Length: 371
Ligand code: NAD
Image 1 (cartoon, protein in one colour):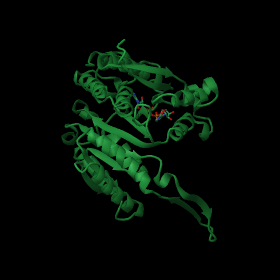
Image 2 (cartoon, protein in one colour):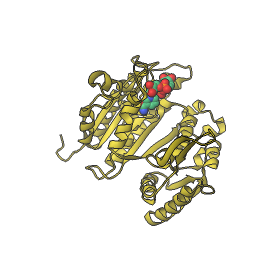
Image 3 (cartoon, helix red, strand yellow):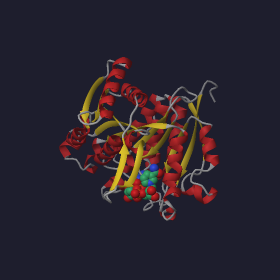
Image 4 (cartoon, helix red, strand yellow):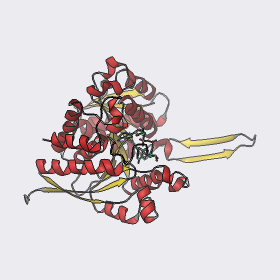
């Protein structure tokens, strides 16, 4: 081995259902990408979710968390399934594994690329003249602030017998600045256009959001083309003409809704990856991150070798980009997936009734197209 070779250190947490099947493809792809692009992968596999409950009595076993603390990022599969559905909500695999991981690593930035390859345009619910060009939009969502977490948050019974519920939307400049920085860095790797989404005609938090974003982007990189849009308009524009956007930057609740809208217009859960980045930097000087497919454990096809590995493979590419600064290697993986789709190969979820291949064949096709 070349003694100058960089080593990237991450844990892989396959989880449940199709998780282990698609994770093994992603790991092979990472190993091969490393051998081409000059890095070695050091990774260990740990139980999480249902596998954690079954083998250790806990969806996020201590050993798994300790292993994650010792590395620079997490490649996550997905967790949950019918076997654990009857557990109390707090012990459900998704809630009991992902929420503590988000908390432990202060994952405040959620990046969801919405990619629809033109070859898969028929999978999109959008009109064909809109979808045929493909879609390439990145949604950057603030993940730990806003109305989901603001205090006070309560329900009480009033004197007249009615019930009253309160949620509070709070943002501080520091929270807005750190997510804006993430969007600026992400935009620098794309087309340098950011559309910040808010509701500044109604909400005080949005007025502060707009002022803070404008000021910081002007300071960090005035060459970025910054626009602002109200969230109701953004929801419409996303289905009317998604490619008018490059990077969408928004707060927690608006991002929750817009990123799901983006996912659905892109057609298939089996193709979509996501990244959640933490505060501070890892040992490489990049953000610590958790990288996972947008879909779940797909119990209907689990164990049959039919799952689409693309979302997990594309999550690995995001990990190289954001937590290890390996942009060329990330692009190589994304291009290999693109070329595989272009070649006509399809797993069942994207075949639309036509002939399809299994997880392994799709994975081998991606591996063979890595340069
Ligand atoms: P799901 O995403 O698992 O499945 C929805 C549909 O999409 C299914 O028909 C499935 O076969 C298909 N699908 C998803 N990913 C696919 C892939 N890679 N290849 C081919 N087809 C794919 O959603 P669900 O059925 O609502 O949830 C199933 C389980 O997954 C539940 O226990 C849920 O809690 C869990 N879940 C976990 C996560 C996570 O770990 N982050 C996210 C969502 C759902």
